[in-house]
Image: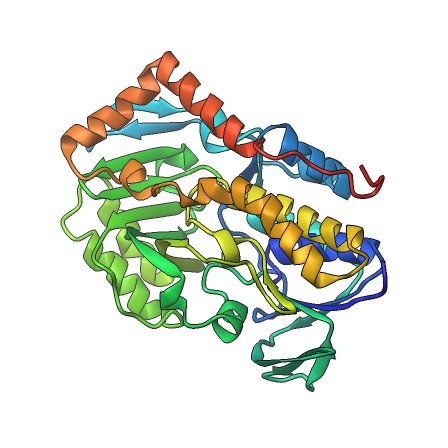
Length: 383
């Protein structure tokens, strides 16, 4: 493939995964990331089935991922008196391979032989017949052959190239928060507590505290964590079990993150020389397939550029043709009513599904089917 000069926005999972493939295929790659470094920690992510495993193996990172996997953790659903109600098996929550997001990001960073611009962001994109002129907040302006938005559900590239976020990101009625609170209550055992429209979980690899709650859409500054912590405090006012202990620790949390459960819906993944990858194109928060979609999407996008010898018009069309049917799982429902059911009856019915081997088996088969619902081309061999 001819030596394309590619800018990737976002250094979480999708962007560095694409960088691994593009540098292997002879491209010159720059990754720009708003954070000052690869972001550590974060919730656990997982891979399911033969398709995900095959892509990790072809990338050459499967052994590294397996060496740093967390292992699926069973989670006990409890009531306010800490009586067990059901057990969510680790194979359901953690897939076949589970790893902390930050650890996966580190592995991808180590395998991508490219330039990183940390602590910077894109401020303007201007497409010309010969490339895309890019202006940065700090770095000098440059021209690139292609620009990839792999910068998450709140994609800056999508906003600059396609239009405002409200046109593509649709609120699904719930918010979630992750907080690192230090010493875990309950000795680190993974437990989950529900009240109608609210869930609080501790233990396991996601974070020391994990919250999901139903809410009208909130208006807040995504950079103002003090206000966000207060929003979570208000959402859990009057909650039972040991939730007040968790909420009291929020002001001192080492790490804290709040976001909405939302879905991205967009008619086309590309516009000219600019293309979207991962959550920026087909995200569904906490949908359970985001990391797999990011890894497979990066594989297909890079592979189609290789197959088209760098012709982005052909490659982008083929990428979308391949990924859109596979990514349809991201358009299905929301995890909110499952994690935070709206009524006591719905909580009991959710718990009952984990007591039935038959229903649990059906759910596991469905997730495996969604994860493997694509025919992978072996781009390196041309078949």
